[in-house]
Image (cartoon, rainbow, N blue to C red; front, side, top):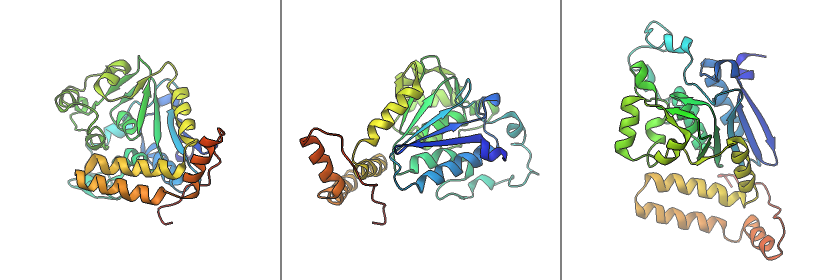
Length: 276
């Protein structure tokens, strides 16, 4: 098997996909093979017909330590393929470039994504976690927007994914200093959602709970949240109405009502795609 094929594993059970970073000997640091594996995993899951939720987790003693040293050493090599002025400005994945897309692909998935963070989540590793809808962290996890340590700016989606999470003045301080914060402080700041002794178990429990809800409504909520975060009030209100019109009276919506009335577990059909 190639490095790319082993860097990330995927297991799908009852509509819940667990995506695990699998480079524990390097604290799951990001190298080209990890970039490709994360993007491929996200794109593969986007095609899963009955996907309900995703959990991002990691093997070993850290979630992701950021860019690995070999890749870091190549950043200043303008002779390398794809390097030089303007190289990163090329939009190769929709609105993003390749390094940004390892984070943005999870935000673009049509279902909720939950990240389970333990150990270190530095630089690109933190930005990867920020691509999830929610982040469960251990109290002693170490998180940092660390790019300034290397004389750089966050450039893997972090400036988009931190919007609305962290108060602007505090976000500036974190970026200016590269300060490492604990999981507890990360929750206080807004970088993380919940502290848990076992973030993987907590994330899986949340994902399984979501998987028991109307999959059409869950996907509609994710679309609505994207609109609500980036649009004016009139656009958001219209989006609410349009999404509700698409849900009312559909088989999965009616099954939600019947299951509640009959006090039983719902039996949903696969979610409708955006083309239906």
